[in-house]
Image (cartoon, rainbow, N blue to C red; front, side):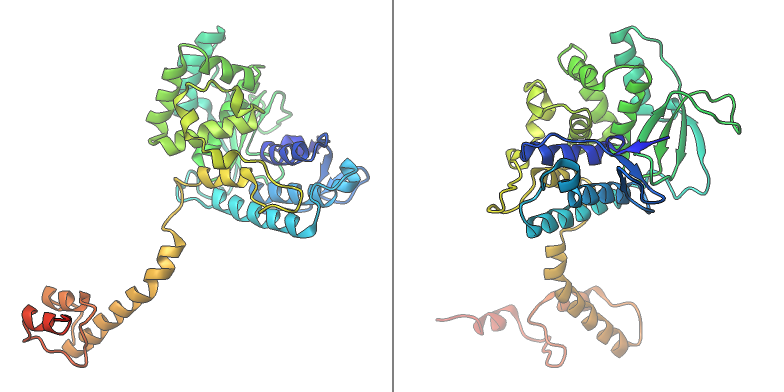
Length: 352
């Protein structure tokens, strides 16, 4: 079975957007993962699907002159800045704190009922709207780098499980919002429904509030609802302007994230898509590194003082009074005078 760039929705979205900004027609091309072949983009072995997406985008950009007849970037600096930012953002998207699956040793067989959000959306909204029967489709979960996040297979030649005629493949990723968005699109594909038309129809119908309400209940906060909706917009090929502007999630989209990328080489090189990814990652990030960098030395100094007093007292437990003294920045372990009152301490600071 031949695999092409367009089989990876995130890679396709990024490359299509770059092509549009350079007024170039996006060209799909087949991929090769094992060996170099004529008229195919050689990717090689990759560690996971996020690594595959990065390799596809980077090698497509590097071969854009051959594939498109025109470079996607006007200079090397712009290209390297973009690829560096893309790499960082894909790593953040992959390594978020919410563990959805552990590393799999072998494929796992499930059904759609296991994914409560998508099951309820199909059962209570999509199937009644389009008058189609609800199917508890088979799902196979595994870690295969050269297959996209989710993919629907209409016919399978599976000797080990002959009872499975069609299924949805899910890659083992630790991002539940991304996974649910991709799974929703794959489920719509299994019904031969056009995902972009379905989503627009839902958001323009009386089911809109119910749909967004289900998202908010299941995903728990507005940030994740925004992420889910933006993934749908990106992967379905929707223009954000085509989405009804009276929807609640529309207000989540920041204008700064929708500025076009400057491919002329004279701008700052900020690609709006990467700004969008930053917004998607907001709910998964930990502490701001700049805060850690600023407070880290002060915290180390404090705990070094604690260890010094522990050695003097020959014990691991310090009384509250000792810790309160340590919190005072003016407290000096080598020259301490615990008998001074607040009045006498203030005398040193007064200017009158």
